[in-house]
Image (cartoon, rainbow, N blue to C red; front, side, top):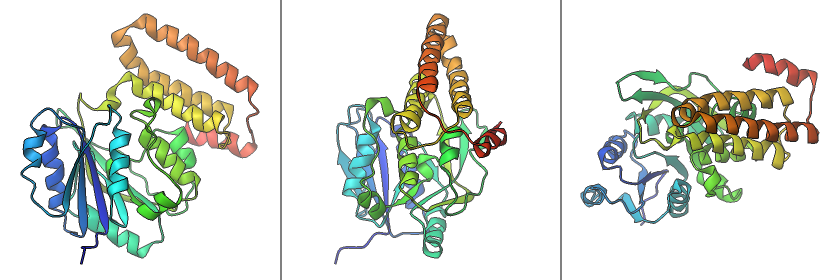
Length: 303
């Protein structure tokens, strides 16, 4: 009889030999054991392949692919191959606390939920640690505004989602190049929009390592972030958004991106500002944006 897995853990990797073993070992050491591991290797050219050959466990599956630099393709391939009831994501440079799966399993059994996440520890090259988020979001809370207005507070390596829920709603990571580094936020928004019951575990169960090779440390991340938010707010016309809130989102992300642009080319920075201001003005004044007293009051909550 084929062994039944409760969790399918998807680990995409590319030339991450220096980190991959650490990530996989954090899974092997989990106190909860009913899981399978699916490692999606994007034809690494470093010593990753040598390490993968040492993994003899029957519950570890290794798949070779060519994702053309789109990590969403690797994650989606993992979802397609998964056999577990629940899918967990783990980036190859992150790790889990040894009781992560056990805690998630207990919450799933006690609560009717489709989509779970937890706090993360951010660990920097200099050894500094920070808590990524410290809030306690309960089931059925409307987290859509949080995802839109604030930074993405759901770390990919902390997420567990019901596999049947993804299949039923035909939800996957967007593989478009303009969603690179923000394909996770796009999926979380889509999951919430179709009515997923979300549960946030207020414990640091994931270690997220920040280093120079992180894809989200690039200026393109902020460009793609604005494009993604724009697609949800304006193009799909499915999120009621106050123009002042959108302006706040716009300014915050431009300021975050400025650190990268100023280091590379100040002229490019100012040209981008002018262009984006023009696009923003066009959107705001040609689209019927919903404004209410409730929305105006909500602005002050996030200032």
